[in-house]
Length: 184
Image (cartoon, rainbow, N blue to C red; front, side, top):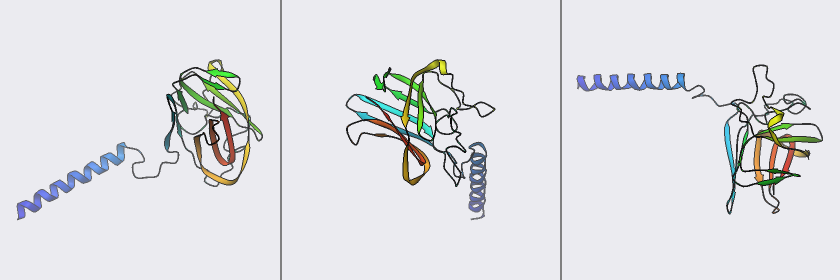
């Protein structure tokens, strides 16, 4: 019986060391991630769209005109640059977006937002000075969309696809603001 307890103790030590190492190397393994990663997809017939982004939370902060300044390029989320993939050509405003993977950038304002689809891929959304890394020479689509004020607060930044009226749109909502980018 004594030998059995010895092996159990050795096993428990190995498990404890394993949990410690996992927690050490996997940053945030036991804490809530402040801006979790998310992927949204839209599929209809042979059209496939996908957006990868990080979802920051409001956490009692002033978002637009505060945390996200007006009239400055925003990485449209947190951490890595937000990406948008399409397998078919899309008409966005008066521009055409060929199939491919793009980074998605915005310039928020109180009444309209500029939305840019950029063909360059960036490892991160901002540089060491916290300025957006977007190079406008790689913009494929640049359009303005109106801001819609919401009655309820959206706590986590949310990107989704809306096809509820048979008019497909890429929507973005956070705090008391929502925008819709028409996709055809």
